[in-house]
Length: 63
Image 1 (tube, rainbow, N blue to C red):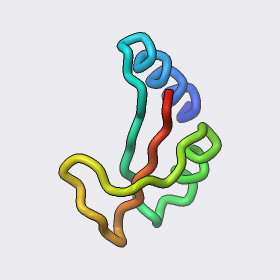
Image 2 (cartoon, rainbow, N blue to C red):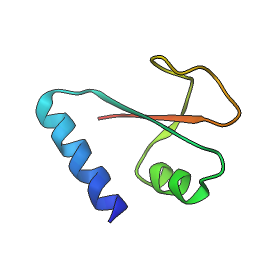
Image 3 (cartoon, one colour):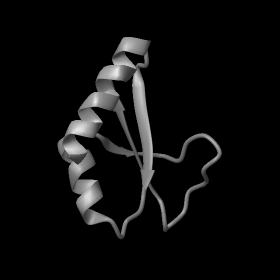
């Protein structure tokens, strides 16, 4: 289900002209990190209003 949702979000982003997807998750969510990594996301620095934190992990993917 998660993989299908990510695929749908990516497709909609492309349709809207988005060139990069970013997300925030936590280091205590290894299943989420594995899902995002397998979908092509990689670790990035904090973005937007977020600040670097040991309780947050930031990921991004060019689309």
